[in-house]
Amino acid sequence: MATGRLSINLTGIAANWQALDALSAAHVETAAVVKADAYGLGVERVARCLSQAGANTFFVAAAEEGGAVRNAVGPDATVCVFSGHMAGDTDMINDLNLVPMINSVEQLTRHLEALPGRPFGVQLDTGMNRLGMEPAEWDAVRDITLSQNPVLLMSHLACADDPEHPMNASQLEVFRAMTDGLDVPRSLAATGGTLLGSDYHFDMVRPGIGVYGGLPFEDAQPVVHLSLPVIQTRDLMEWETVGYGGTWTAKGQAKIATVAAGYADGLIRAQSNAGTLWDGDTPCPIAGRVSMDMIGVDVTHLDRVPDSLDILCPYQGVDAVADAAGTIGYEILTSLGHRYQRRYITG
Ligand SMILES: *Cc1c(COP(=O)(O)O)cnc(C)c1O
Image 1 (cartoon, rainbow, N blue to C red):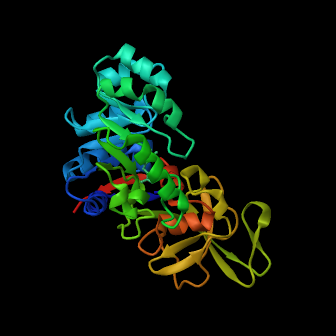
Image 2: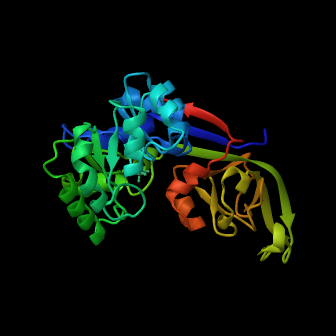
């Protein structure tokens, strides 16, 4: 077998969602963000598991992602779309009963004309400058929008992973100024905002990464395990090199294991000569450049070469791998490749 084994722990995913749910008061709904194939972990399995754990509202990035979620969670759950009602989305929104988060006057017009009476939310821009209506635009259409009974007013925090960042309080203030007294359910917090405390919770929190075991939710359980088979080993003499460009040089006699996975599997190349694989609790450094389908690993210090080495395991989670690659856990998860044998674990 020459592909990695990726285990996804659904029980851990449910436990993380429940732990995040417990951080807000009982009247605050905890939704689940399952965009990008549930952060790379497989949206059908993950959404069904979260639905069984108690989640009733799911968020995706684009209407195209809504079908798989609707399939998984059944007709009664609410499936919301962050990118709103784009041209060409009307049939999907209608057929799959999706709730677009309207981002502009143009989208508002489109929605009210194409699907009058159908539910929608409104996304407001409180300073991230990415999506949503800005304060002046909202002022102009607020009354007509409210007359159409939006089901949610939401915004997104730019810096919530840093509790000390002054933008958190300033976005909170802008969100309040735009929505106080309007008698529509509100949502501001993703994982980071959920951890900032009750001022940020309003009526709904929308965690994503924390559910999948990533920072900033430090108490999360890790939910992925990735084990890569060793295809071959090489004994090197001093001064011999490993991999493309010969960027790793043996300082003495060395043993290199070649494992079956590379940047085509989402093990991004920036880990070259920087990342670590694990034999149980023993770290083994990546030797040389990550290639498309293979990685060289220095196993000189092991008594025996194991059949496989782990890159995601209890000793090294997605954020540790991300650190070695100069990125974030989100990118490690959403990059996980499709050649792995995937196994879902429960219990
Ligand atoms: C992705 C996203 C979330 C979830 O964010 P996490 O940091 O993964 O918890 C919530 N809201 C919006 C608007 C998003 O784009």
